[in-house]
Length: 245
Picture 1 (cartoon, rainbow, N blue to C red):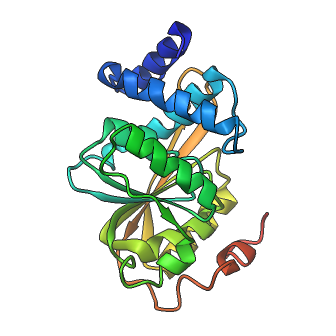
Picture 2 (cartoon, one colour; picture 1 turned 90 degrees about the horizontal axis):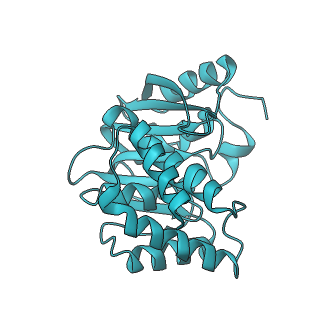
């Protein structure tokens, strides 16, 4: 990582209230691993150092706003992690938290696994699969303290996929761009349908870049009906209370 990249990471983290000086070597190694792997396998569309630092590393760290991922021993599932975001940056700064990054694309999970091993992130346990399947698996249903997801789908879809996996009192932390009132309203209805309630809508701008972001927090307040999540592909094809695409 160049001095300019280090400066961007320091500044972006500082604007989020974080000091990542001690973790800079791990972030530098992660950057090298990602760039090298991406030259051989298509893992991310972001190619430049500044884009990766700001739109992957800093953007992932913004999930820490509100303190929802603070606490040793938390079990956190990352739905649709892709090349390991937000899991890998979060695991670097929160090594006391257990992360399970989930993605249906094996080549991406293979990279996340190898990167976690290279970075000695012992709390990261990557998993190939779909949230619909996990949500019906007794080994995963209602087993997680937190579910995070980063720009994966519309809020009603995220509610149906994430809430079944949460313990009672657990939190879904959905990271999105600007969110419309229509999507938020549908998300509230969907959350209620699957045992949750929206507790926080945190609109902010991404450090340095100024891009609009929103963290939507949904708490698991009641049991999820057994019929949810629906079978693979249905939540995306037929979102609860939501027809916009």
